[in-house]
Amino acid sequence: MPTAASDFSSASLLHTFPWDAGWVTAVSFLGSGSSGNCAVVKTEKTAVLLDAGLSVRETGRRLAARGLALSDIAAVFVTHEHSDHARAACDFAVRLGIPVYATHGTARCLEFPGPLFADVRPVADGRRVVLGGGDLEVQITATPHDGAESVCYVFQDGAGRRVGAATDLGHLSPRVLDALTDCEVLGLEANYDVDLLRAGPYPFSLKQRILSYLGHLSNEAAAAALARLVGARTRAVVALHVSRHNNTATLAERAFERALGELGARVTLDVAKPFAPTEWVTA
Image 1 (cartoon, rainbow, N blue to C red):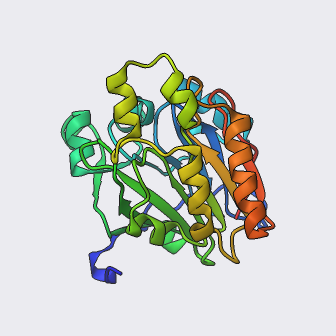
Image 2 (image 1 turned 120 degrees about the vertical axis):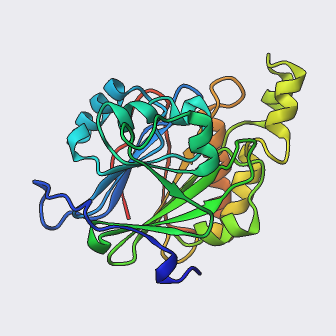
């Protein structure tokens, strides 16, 4: 665990929102899949985006469907440079002046302009970012994917409630498992059904990339990991990044349902959609 001295602190990113005082920490996955990934995490005082794979305009439209505006967003956290996760990252930083957090490798690939034009803030594996005077703490963990320096994030509010999400994983490394275990809300990739992928239209090289140790998680691999990840505090599980070509929402949901049923876990289950936001999932 890093010491406080190693943390990135942004206490100035303290917003005041017209939300009810009783608002609980929650996440809505605004879009999930190869067409664009973006989620909003909201605590009592702070709202941030996880990834920027939708256009700014579309992000604003989907935020509005959940009662928020682009002006409510305090920061954007980017997992890696692939366009379905970072398409609008530069627009958020340059056009809207919103701080964008990314690893050095991701930022280098995205070719942000200099600091006079874009507020890009570095993150690194094992570090933390603190926003809103401690209202939100973000833990960063390296992920096994074929990006330059990909990471996942766990968002923790001042009361210790956690929202963890990870996609684009060739496998679940021990450190990713540790980071995601027993989150109140767990979002986990269920990208493909092995049989559908093997029989599908993708070229052989792309199939091999997806199946590789640095590719994506299958329904079966993700479902098997739930035995380790779901704990006493877990309230909700959301299947993410479900392929429209090599999977179906029904197959992903069934795989997760079976695993959760074997655990006897009493949690809510949802499958994030590519073109519409989920309801608020509370932590």
